[in-house]
Structure formats: structure tokens, C-alpha cells
Image (cartoon, rainbow, N blue to C red):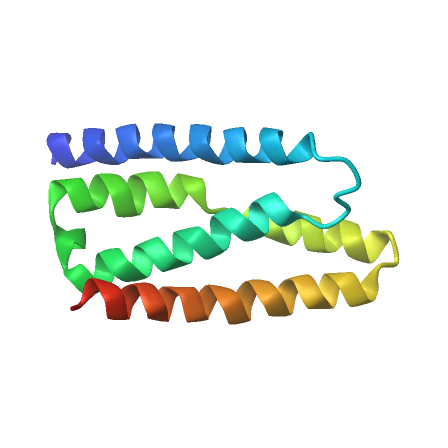
Length: 120
């Protein structure tokens, strides 16, 4: 139990730092009024967790570190919801609806593709 908990904590630390690094890097790109960084990490995370689950590697300590720890911290539903709310407040309803649709449609498709790839 202690080893598994430490593995999840280490993975979570690395996932959070990775997400932060991507967000900072993308914030330096001028004229990005769409929350691309969150979309990218959530779709990539969906693909990776699908692949991890498909491979059944998720039940190992390394799988816990990567799946629960790294990907749990790397992807972010809370930030996604906040960004949707900000778009709504800015009266960018079409952009908010598109962001929700893209995130869920591409995210689920990416998870499926990852699962298929991982289970081969």
C-alpha cells in the first residue's frame, strides 16, 4: 500500500508539472483566445489512459503511477469547466459550446483509439 501510494504521488507530481509547463508554453503564443492547452492535455490524457487500460498494465504499480498519478494530475476537468464558464461570461456561447463538444467527442474517440491500440 505504501509503495503504491508513493508511486501515485510521484506520478501526480510529474503530471502536474507537465500540465503546468504546457499551459505556460502555450500562453506565450499570441492571439490564442481558445483554451488549447487544456484541450490538448485532456485529449492526450484520454488517449493514454485508454491505451493503459487496454494493455491491462493499469493494475501494476507502474500503471498506478502513470494512470492514477501522472494522468490524474496531467488532465484537468476542473480547469476545463472554469474555461467554459469564462467563455460563457464573455458571451462567447458558440465557442463555449464548441469547446465542450470538441473536448468530449475527441476525448472519447481518443480514449477508444488508445484502448484499441493498447489491447493489441
